Image (tube, rainbow, N blue to C red):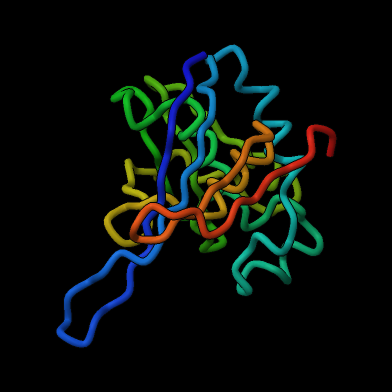
Length: 178
């Protein structure tokens, strides 16, 4: 296990059209080994809640608690596996036969799918056969805050927000026992 740091910067557009840094979210975490994938996947699933979802996924999530959580669950696993420093862990996505986009990781041909269980309640299979390597959503492929929050919940660490001058403006801490 190695201690690592991830950051997510927020910007706003100034009147002159330039982008200005407004705050930075920072999270320290420990990387995990491949032998921990099953236990960490289970832990990720235990922390998934409807408020983590975009509105468009909430209705289907009422009857399938994993539905809509594949992106941030996959990205959280990617972070903890130290995916940014490993060329052999690749995010994949594909459209299933119902038209839903699904995300998972591919490690040298092995599928790592935290939310595969959602397909037990659907009338189709995960779209592994049609999936392709895919860059993360978002501006400059930056991490989603939901993904960082999942890592924080699992690792029970602090999520710190600083302003453009490095001054701490908020700190989200978790109790050791949830």
